Amino acid sequence: MVGKKTEIIFKDQASRSITEIRIYISEQGFPDFANQFMIELFNFGFALKNFPKKYPLCRKPILFRKEFRCAVFKKKYIFIYKLHRNKVVIYNVIHSNRYIY
Image: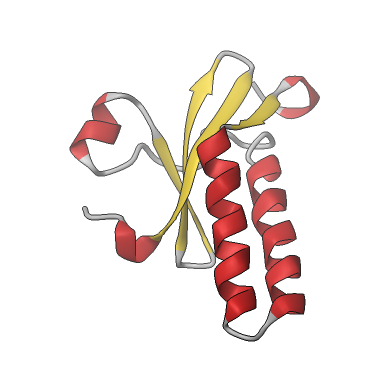
């Protein structure tokens, strides 16, 4: 499940969350940084195809039971994703303050 054969799928909620992060940063007065950061978030998500099992199962019990994985980006953003055969499906991207362990 490594490399070119692995497909990355951003569910609608994950794409919306990344857009909301960009909007929030932009509204704080940093529109150029916001656009660059959005690109970095998407790139991180696409990079999950290289080592999809690198990140552990989420610690939150309901996510753990359903075999969701949590990848932390820049210590503040958590990509919640799941492996499906040759696909990495990213369900959401949340700020770590919203993730209750």
